[in-house]
Length: 264
Image (cartoon, helix red, strand yellow):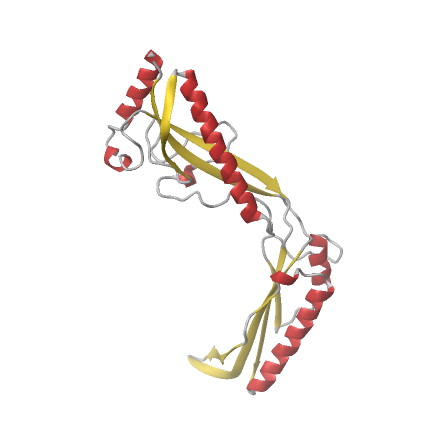
């Protein structure tokens, strides 16, 4: 029982720190346990995105429009030919605006600029590689790639949150049993780290050796986001060279405060 009383006294003293006014809104004044749950998983990306920017400038608007339309049709055909995922193909509306250049301290009208952006994702790096190999870029056709993504990210996030929440329940029960305490209810649960002292800088959470730095999760910063690691896809240096498909790590954290009573 002395250990439990010491633990509760430590918590009470911590809340009496100079920033106790701010902490009062995040932690209860009664005896409690503050626990953190963490879950992560590493997956391989299955969406390899390419973006095509089309633009043509001409004094005759219709000529510029027709060139952009012809390039759009060519790119869309290549999307289909190389197996772009149908529901990821996007074609923006045409944008038409005057085009000028700066020359000798004055704007010089060059004609009408007609532009359009296209985008699609391929299921494998090999498929994207094949598309890039057949895609001829020019001044009017600009090609770029984006960071590969994972199509099941939303479902995975939900699973990780559930795992992290379950971990908080198990941790709270283990701590309560170890000190002979009894959990009386759940005070709060969140994916935002509460502001607390507990012997460390307020707003941070101590990590085990080798664990990721959590300083980004300071007070007020939402944890409703993922820690994603991996490399950005880039156009290959030579034909035949495969794009990198680095794994992506998703991490979710949950913080829970359980109210407790002395079990005696």
